[in-house]
Image (cartoon, rainbow, N blue to C red; front, side, top):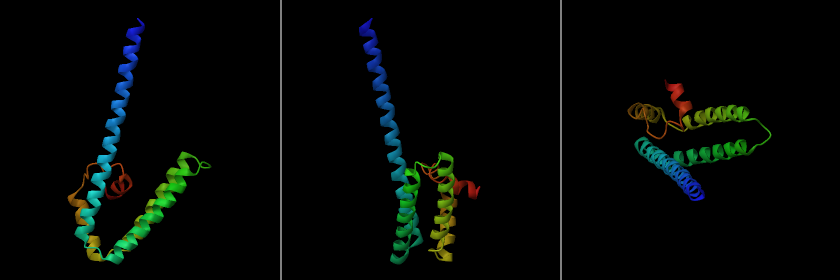
Length: 132
């Protein structure tokens, strides 16, 4: 009986480890696809070095502020969600000022050509809700 219990415990532990490995691989794939999508879009937009520097600075500042919100234990999860939403909107507006009207049009077409953006859906739910 104890041998049977040990085997069951061992099999369950293996199943949990396998599930965690699959989830980790899926997250890595999503990140890779997202990076490739951004590189492709930036290439098609033909960004200047100045635009790239501006976008990088905006991204780094947004990342720092989002990390600060995430680590703020004095606010509720709902408050964090609202702050993230506000911050994303604020930085989306900042990023849009970097692009020329032609680049904005190219970006709109790019998003129309890649409506599903596999793996990116969870990252851009706010954007998709806005465009739907």
